Length: 542
Figure: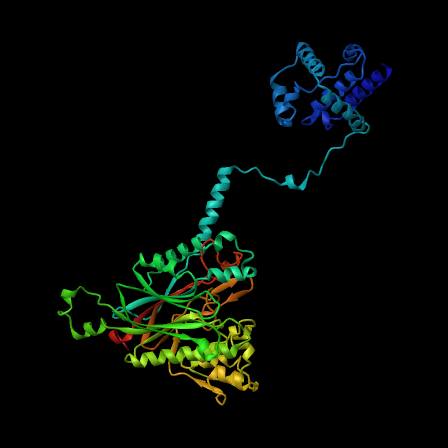
């Protein structure tokens, strides 16, 4: 009994000595007071000791245990509205006494264990916490409505930033009647994405799902109003063919040889073109790996109804019979095998020129993923029509790994398109084995390459913004994943075709905001290239 009295008076005295910042006046402090009183009762043989000789302690307001989690501000607001009477305090104490008598055995043990903690708590004067947890110090309360508005605004802003713009040529094309839009697109093969997960480790799995990506690709094509499509890394041709047929496309497919599952596909609008001839190249037959190339000779269909055909002049009849060679390829990736890359490009150009001559010297448009940068010797070969192989190291023919900043700042001069390559051409003579020369040039004794086509890059022909173009005129980036960001995709054409407009890619800073491609807005790790071309023989050729 004496021990209980001492404990009771010690706790009560501590309560009286608490400063305004003690636990008693903080949220939940009243529950601590109740626990202390309960401990006294449980250790007393006579429950009346709870109210017999104990000095009264006034609680700050009506502190019902059920309200112990409410904020301090709420307690003070109620205290100012209501005045407490002795009867209410006696009623409150009676409630506490009644609740204590109803405690179970487990609750009694818990409260008994709290006795030591209570004594320790009141052993010293509590200190006011001037440095609350950093996680809550600057936290602001935000309503869900505001968060939703912010999220929608950011999503709308991201969508606007990912919107691609058309850039038009400064030339007047009002007199050019026959035009078409061609798209080159590496759509990321399903099997390739599965074989190289390290390239897409930061990409959400849902963005790699083919069921989602194929719909995004077809919807993207609709926005460009394309007439001809050149796809690379196609391993689900039937899916694409089914979806694109609904939009009026017909297509042909050429799978890679060997164990590879993907290939190339060319689609064309059936209302606009007729397929006259189809031909393919299997590079394996020339010892140049399993890559392939495909060609289609397409003829434009009449733009006018049949009754009006005879009423038009011969010039109109000529404009309605335009034909062209469309080539599509995906060059070997391996950056160190420049000899094989160059050999594939060489055969690709030779076949295109041959078909052009066989069908009456018709225009040529070539598209594809060449796995070579604009600073590479392979790009130089395409643009200048010639190349001295021994002035280049075959391990750096494509410049995929190392791109010199000086080359990015080099300039094209009108009429001297090969001058941009002086910074990367070396006076040194590199050693090529006979086998490497044979693969690259087709002969062990030949080191000077030349092709018969006079090719022009579509994007070079329509100057664009520095945000999306390098100083050569090509896009800054057409592909982006965890290990590469740069340009490897192109559209080339001969002089019988002129670029009317080109579709700009995305600025580098916009691309870097994502974890890589594909993403929410784009269905492949490449960006599609699109260009509208016009035949020059039915327009103003001056």
